[in-house]
Each structure stands twice: as C-alpha cells, then as structure tokens.
Length: 270
Image (cartoon, rainbow, N blue to C red; front, side, top):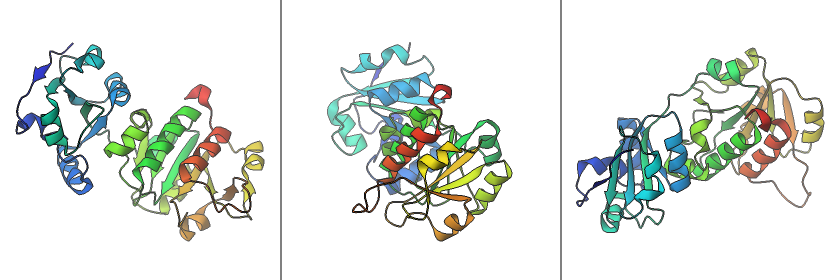
C-alpha cells in the first residue's frame, strides 16, 4: 500500500495531469501528449484501481485518503492536497474529492474485437460524452461484448464519459474505425449482421429481430437529433426499431441502447 504524499502548492508539477478538467480543448492537448485519462469519483477510481490498466497517480482531498488507500499500490503516486489546492488545479470546486490518472488503453482493431465478441455496439457521430458513458455502462451491465466508434464519435476517455460509465468504460474492449462506413463491411466480413437502430416506422420491431437473432450482431447507434447517416443506413443489413407511442418522436440514444442491449446481450457472459 502506497504512503500518501501531502502537496501544499498548486504549482507542483506532479499535479500537471489534473489541470483544467473542465476545459475540453486543453484536456485534449494534455491527454494527447501524455496518452492518459482522468477518472473521477470514489466508485470510478476504485474500479480503476481494481483494473489491469497502468495507473500513474491518485489525487485526493486531505482527509479522504482512507476511501481508496486500501487499493493504492506502492508503484502509484498517492497525492494528497488541501481543498484550495485541489480547486485551483482542477479549475472548479471538486466535491467528490478523488481523482486518478491512468494510461489510455490502445484502441482495438476490428479484427481484435471480432475475435472474442458476439455482440458489438457501434457508435456513429455521438458527440455527447454523457451518452457515451451511459452506453458503455449499459453495454457492460447487459452483456454487450465490445464497442466500436466511428471517426467522428467523441472521446470515450474524456473524464465525464468515464464518470458516467461508473468506470465500466475501463472493462469494455473499445476500438475506433479509421474508415467509415467501410468499417461496417469489415465487421460483416467477420460474420456480423449490421443492425441499424432507427425510429423509422418501416424498420423491423426489436422483438421480432431478437426472436430470430443472428449469431453475431453489430448494433449501430446514431447521434441525438440527426440519427444515423444515410450512408450507414444504406450499408446496414437490417433496420430495427423500438416500438414507441406515435406522439413521441424518439428515445434518448442512451435509453434506446439500453433497451436494445437488454434484448440482444448476454449478461451471464459479461
């Protein structure tokens, strides 16, 4: 178990990885250079500490060391700061008081994902970090095996996405396609049926699709508002819908994903 190290100055370079947490543009630059991400909150940090990821440091408010101390190994910097130092470094009043910095896992190739997955969530153009986090959490809970992002989907390792996933992002194999929608053809070559989730009334009901479920399914999810691109819809094998009241336009993508995951996933194997 690591020995906590009290830092009294917000200028200490050991705190550099935690600066400007609410500034996405600065975080993109910082994290791209360091290849790391930040986890926030007791539950999320404990999940990180239990994972196989490489962890650089844990940062906690003075007096809260005991919330994670049992999991902080000797090879991890265990940094403790007063509240004023924490708030100066991160740029806001951090109520949760527990952060950690870890190395980003490498993106998995489609071949790697396909080697072990039976069901993959495929995200196109989803730019809301909270939706990405919610989808990852539901995927883990409901037995979806992996997640593939198109080139325009937002960073799944941004702090908010990791937090909303409750740390499950760190346990889900994730890849990012470099060519789109060519990635759908590659998935198909591995035996996946591409099922596009859409509110279109012409689509097959989810229950009917599930009743004759193909062995391998790649479930395609689109962004709030615009939904899936026409190219993605054209390159899918089947369009699937969740029946809803005609007076309601659509479901939030995170909620829709969870419903579809519950129908298609296998949580006993998660």
